[in-house]
Amino acid sequence: MPTFAPKPLTRAAASILGAAGAPDDIAGSVARWLVNANLSGHPSHGIIRLSQYLDQIEAGAYRPAERPKLLAESGATVLLEGGGAFGHLAAEELTVRLVEKSRASRVAIGGIVRCNHIGRLGEWSELAVSMGAIFLMIAGGPGMMRTAPFGGREGRMSTNPISFGAPGGSEDPLILDFATTAAAEGKIRVARDKNAQIPPGQILDNQGRPSTNPHDLYDDGVMLPFGGHKGYGLMLMAEILASNLVGDTLLPTPHHAIGTFALAIDPNALGAGAGFAAMTDAMIRRVTSSAPAEGFSEVLIPGDVERRSRQALQTAGVDLPDATWNAVLTAAASVGLPPAAVNAQAAGEAGS
Image 1: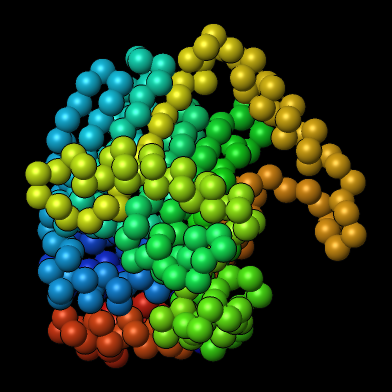
Image 2: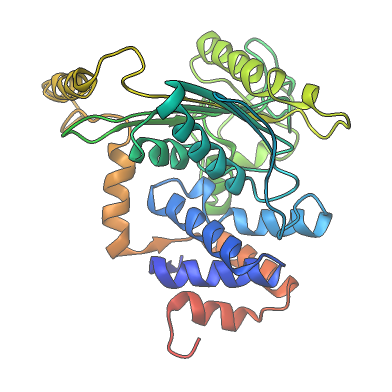
């Protein structure tokens, strides 16, 4: 399992994306977002996606030089079209536009149609919070339909992830980011690449039997909602907001029903003023001051794990399973980059 320092790994990823047709600014941004997912402890949305993106470029589903387009706008709404671009670009633009609008309108909502994979949703909640907003983002729709509804055994839904962020004052912000399936599909992919088992309750095999073998998902198996009927309910809510409200209903020519919904709220929208930050800080201190239960050393808030992971891995480096890195090298070779050169660049070797 190779280990790479973040900066040279980012440069190598950008080189691969550039060779696949992405302009320098797009290649650099997408590479940075992918590596940041690894650093944040979410390799499911990191470098492992490079080979997937290149496959989709070759298939024509991604247009690496494309940029998102504004379809409609009002004082408190924004609708973007991804247009075959990397979805990260549209997610970033939507986040920034909505936060800026919420400063004037107090609340702003928006969405993205024709949107490719937007990466780790927590990335965008972290961005919004850094700009001072409360933020919700949901990506959802039928999509790949690898998820069974509660009580079912056939794929009828996607992972429908949700992210939420809220700024504090002196305390770190709260950042939630989770799939409404028991595990994100990318995490099962990581386990497959490591040839590791997954916990029970995440998937069924193609006969509808519970399985802990990640390969079974990719042999016509299905994922399961987290928390049984509760996760299933959130999954339906996510599809209504991200797909039914924002998806193909808005387009003259059908593309796919996956959509992205986002909501930005000014913390002073209802007049809370500085009280919002003070009460959020107090809430965070109240829960984290709890005596830890058996098996735990402390109580954390959502977002702590990612912040600590980034701090640790900036120094320790990013570990990639052999299968993941070999897939990246194969993808690089498909766009004309010799694997040896990519290896040297990712390793930070002089002259690479």
